[in-house]
Image (cartoon, rainbow, N blue to C red; front, side, top):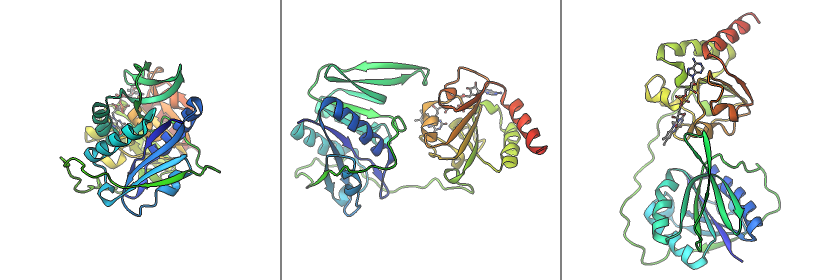
Amino acid sequence: MGEIFVVVEHRKGEVREITFEMLFKARELCRAFSLNLTAILLGGKDEGFSGELAKRADRVLAFEDNRLATFNSDLYKEILDRLIREHHPFITLIGHTSWGMDLAPALSVKTGFPLATDCVDIQAEEGRPKVIRQIYNGKLFSRVSFKESPGYLITVRPGAFLPPDHIEGASGVVVKQELPAGLAELKKEFIEFVDTGAGDIDITQAELLVSIGRGIGEQESIVAIKDLADLMGATLSCSRPVVDKNWLPKFHQVGTSGKSVRPKVYLAFGISGAFQHVAGITGAGTVIAINKDKKAPIFRVADYGVADDLFKVADALKERLRNA
Ligand SMILES: Cc1cc2nc3c(=O)[nH]c(=O)nc-3n(C[C@H](O)[C@H](O)[C@H](O)COP(=O)(O)OP(=O)(O)OC[C@H]3O[C@@H](n4cnc5c(N)ncnc54)[C@H](O)[C@@H]3O)c2cc1C
């Protein structure tokens, strides 16, 4: 029986959420194509990841060696190329993350397999995968098919698939692997993680987030929304342009290059809903969007929406709260 590979992503002793998202989707594809699911773990010694992964995969090929404790695309590419040649997986899933963006194109060149990047869905059609990608900043979806190939590489956008919190029953085998001999000399070396600093607030722990985007217009206007956040007992967060313009420090930023947040309620003021932002709020409870453009993509992920001027809405809310 053929198989689907999922390349496990981890950092600082933790398996990253994208891994579980890919395993969840891969399981569905395995059913559609009658394949087995194999997690490929390239990690450090004694990190204890394989047990957790075996709950979600039929098999874990576990390379546990301290040379693999941190990501190195050169090393990953060499090992994965050899594994792919040996096992012929039908599909190999890699996260569309800074890891995946570094690794997947190089692996595609090395293996000769076609690659589709940043996919938000994968479907089984006529014995081949078809993928869905977003284009024009999320305004359109495109369906992409592959030319026939012995194997396919796909990078998956974080947050595209939501796995259940709890898995019951499944128990795969863990097969320990040795690093192959004769690997090519590495061209780069990991040095250290540099913390951007948590700052004086931690948006990842907030239960109520009031978030501002470029729609705020200018730094001086932030105070109007900050007042609202204070009245609500909420924490202020923002989209990336607000940080890029130096209107707020980086630790307020939500999204793929900021923080993933899980508030009970997320209020988005003047945020368009680009996927890099939305990927950071997949764990939010209720999303409420305020945007003057009723076609803004944020309304697709919002539970409630107000298509109006953000200052008007903020003023009305403040008045309500002051009179409550
Ligand atoms: C590698 C990479 C990583 C990235 N990482 C992140 C990330 O981590 N987080 C992130 O947020 N972005 C990230 N981005 C940027 C992302 O692609 C978008 O550009 C960004 O999210 C847009 O921010 P925005 O919604 O605030 O601004 P815009 O897209 O400009 O949207 C502003 C919105 O405000 C609305 N608006 C304007 N005035 C008003 C008003 N008076 N009242 C109501 N609504 C109003 C407009 O209709 C518009 O929809 C990243 C991009 C790249 C390439």
